[in-house]
Image (cartoon, rainbow, N blue to C red; front, side, top):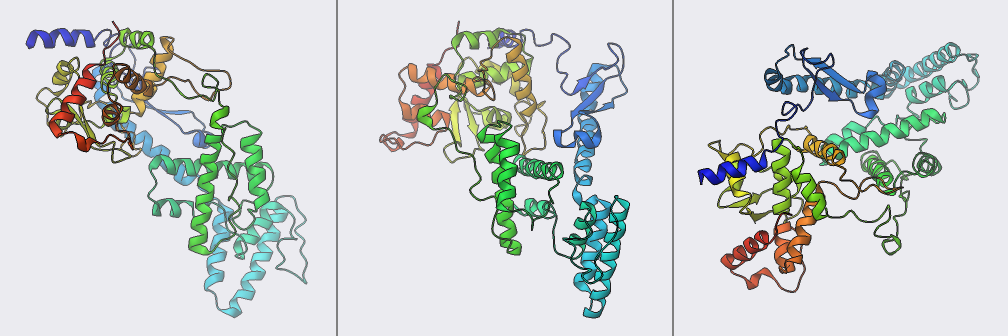
Length: 473
């Protein structure tokens, strides 16, 4: 067992220490022998505010081993800075907006006699703002509250509408809506991005960014100019439009805001029968045997090399591998305990080629610890594989394993292609479709049900299915 374990370990660690090992989030901007820094990417929506595409923090050491140990705490500090920036760039931090909302609150609570005085104060303040921004500051003394017509400058008109309660910033209740939802952190981020895009477009075309002024035509113009004319993929565009539509649905339930201007704004999906399989909009594909051979023989680091092999010989999704704990690898099976569907919660036999490697990864560690302990938690719904997914994409392209068609959003091969390759090989080996489906965690409505098998029979069938998949020589 010891000799076999040693041989397997060597085969799985080829090239893993080349270049100094794991350097995720680490850089030496001043060159070798100088201090290491930790790096955090700044979201596109915040790059203008922060004035940077990435944040860096010195770890005050030129020792890579020390830097590896210190990076996670430093990375937490940088991510907190990004989160704080996201909060402070909210429209609620605009000085004029704060002033207008203060007037609005006072107006709502004021006695009737005081309300008239407040309305005149709002009109006077709007005139001052108008004058400050190049207007005349003039207003109709006979109709001091007709703020939609006078004063004419956008900032003063918006101030008056907000302060008098006639308009509400479109993003004022965004965080309240998201905090009351059950959306994942990634979905919430998509919603924030969609609202930021809508706000930026409103500023660009000099359109008021209010709930009350967002009409059906405004929503259509935004969709056509930002998504259709820019040739954004319908799937991406519809994700953003759906977020805006759902926010307005919440506004309707909470404040009876209707109609919903974002209804029926989705872009049409391409007809399935009109999509050429090999065209830019065709489905993604499995790796070929040559591509699998190239990826597994390349200079991957230890974690990436092991994750790739587990994916190829088990059909597990990348996030399922990242969530595996030591206790989930008992009885020569991987136990998937978290999934989007009921069928996804399953056990998958550990391939004989993988057992020595899994045994080494387990060692004598705590059963509650992760099988891959060095994968960082990104803070996105307990996602631990975002960094290694990006690392794999860079690694794959560096080895020339790519299939990006002209006009396509992304390559037809990605990490999920290991899963597709496993399914293809399992079916090519003559395994029953429902057995393959159970290993993959697919929902099945096949006529042959698992009620026909005993637990022991099903376990044998799944084990035989997994073992029938062979890595390319």
